[in-house]
Image 1 (cartoon, rainbow, N blue to C red):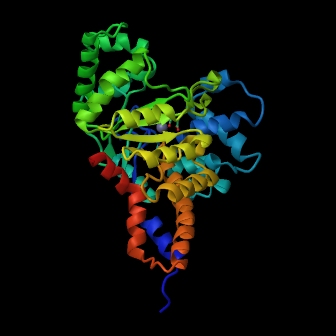
Image 2: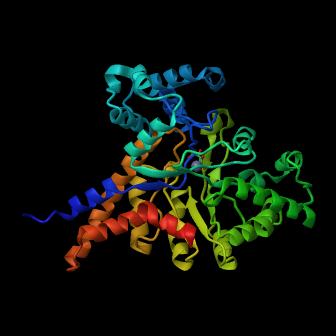
Image 3: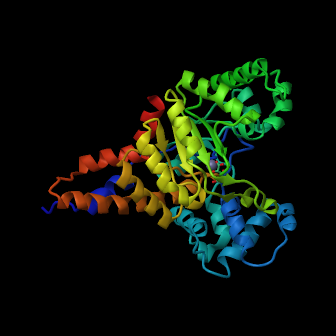
Length: 411
Ligand code: RAT
Ligand code: ZN
């Protein structure tokens, strides 16, 4: 019998590895008002909204006033009925349809509507996660979101495959705007951020760590992120968040480079990207060795510097190819670069899925690209006389798609 080729062994390992999706915007069915699934949600993904507006003049105001089904129909018409759906997000819809055995070209949006479940139940969630080969998804949990807060306060049970992450954007990025919500939740905080106020912010976070049991805390930051920073957000980060994360052994995920609302008329689709300085990150990793940082940068131009920084600091774990980087060519470039500079010691990808069925196309694609890159790299090892066997490949693949994340969280 012929020995399987390296490409076959890698293909099998990558296809069958069970993924932990360490950053999504998904919610379980029990968080009914936040859970998103179904064809209309798939079509109204903000990635597709931005693309649809490029295809010709249209009124954003009218779009936002249109009910969901009408928005989905408009996007479908614009992106699928005139030109071919070549973009990553548009062709992702085809991949979802195919996974549900829908011939979208023949059956149209209605065919997809019939196959996908608009109000997912637990069984449907399991089915989609299984189709995507994902064991667990990490949510993005914002205690400043009144709807979400209600579910947590009611202690609504979580689907067992959903894991929480405590998101702190408002606290760090818009401190002035959280003063009043914090006060109405019973935490005595004022704009001057006295020692007493810091203690109260700490109490707030302790309460939410206790309630959510997050696997990490997270903040998305602008390209202009600076550290240290004398503003209230910077002080909360330095004096409250970092010590608390260290004490609870919680990594802090920093997602840097999002330039919010470059075009506010597009709402959630109106954010952009910008290159950030590596110095704040170096400073954090160096001066806070007791802290662990999961880091993703949004700008392509930052990717090389991020990996170099990761070479310097074991408490920095690069993760994922975020948002505008989650494309075939960029995931390939970034994954290659990471393997070449730090070996398989990073988290290859996260999905950022907002709609349940996104998991299907996002993970199928990431698997494909990573398999391509790994095949190339193992073939090189084989050329140098190194025996590459299926077991070793499985170990590396598991590290990249799940184990590195869990080990880092547990460290
Ligand atoms: O990728 C996205 O969907 C973005 O809109 C953001 O949510 C980003 O991923 C974030 O977590 O801030
Ligand atoms: Zn996200």
